Every structure is written in C-alpha cells, then in structure tokens.
Amino acid sequence: MTISVLVVCLGNICRSPMGEAVLRNEALKRGITDIHVDSAGTAAAHLGEDPDDRTIAVCNTNKVPISHSARQVRASDFTSFDYILAADGSNLRALERQVSQSEGSKAAVKLWGSYLPDNKPIPDPYYGGQDGFTKVYEQCVKLSNAFLDEVVGKES
Ligand code: 4NP
Image (cartoon, rainbow, N blue to C red; front, side, top):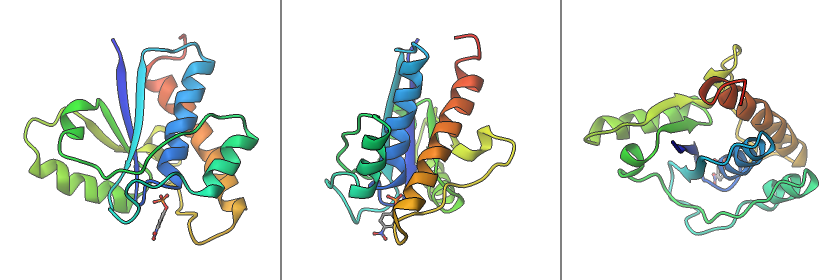
C-alpha cells in the first residue's frame, strides 16, 4: 500500500519543498517506491513560485532532485494524505485549525520533529543566509529517516 505524505511550512518555497525532495530521496535510497510525497504552505504569498534559490542550491550540492510549484494547503489534503508533517508549531496550529473545519479527515497531522526525541521545529531560514538552509537540509535528512524508521519500518 502506498503511503502518502504532505510536508508543510509557511511559504512552501524553503523548508517544505526541501523536505519533500529529501524525504523522497531518502525513501528511494532505501528502495522504498510505494511512497507519494508532496508539499504545501499554510500561507498564499508565493503561489506558483519555484523553490527558493537557496533551497535549490543545497539540494543540488547534495544531488537531491527538486522540482515544485508552491501551493497552499487545501481541504482535500486532509482526506487524501496519510500524514501531514508540519515544519514548526505555528504551521501545526494552522493545520489543526483547518483540520477541525474539514470533514472526514484521515490524515495524521503532526510536527515532523515529533519523530525524533528532541521534538524540535525546523526554523524558518528565509531571512538568513545559505548556512541556515544547510542546517535545514541536515535536519530534513534526519527527520526523513526517523519518519521512515517509524512508519515504514527499520527493516525495509
Ligand atoms: P518557508 O519559508 O515557510 O520555509 O517556505 C518562508 C518563505 C517565505 C516567507 C517566510 C518563510 N515570507 O515571509 O515570505
């Protein structure tokens, strides 16, 4: 059975398209093909935009394919995705408000960081430099593996 995962941040141009690309890539490295990964933002400011140049740069450096057009979270995401993973607490709260208004939600809506014992948010790198994006990348790798360990299993 295919698992579907939506990674969510604010603008859907920095953290979540990187998280989407990294999670897909880490799954592929484990030979997992029955996973569908997408990303979205809780805000609408960057609709249709490519990922931020600094997100693309760190993905290119690490040979992680990335291609995404920014979109906002929509009601149907709560019925079509198994997991919705928020980058930080503010986006988690926005999702929880939205889920309470959607009928028949099947998605597990969680802080992505909750898959690691430290339960840390992914900090917003938008107003900082490239090093913040490198840190986000490293966090996405760890979080992807923690998620895959728990949800798909360490043996796969
Ligand atoms: P993201 O980063 O939520 O990781 O995509 C941001 C992108 C844009 C803005 C803030 C955060 N912004 O204020 O426009």
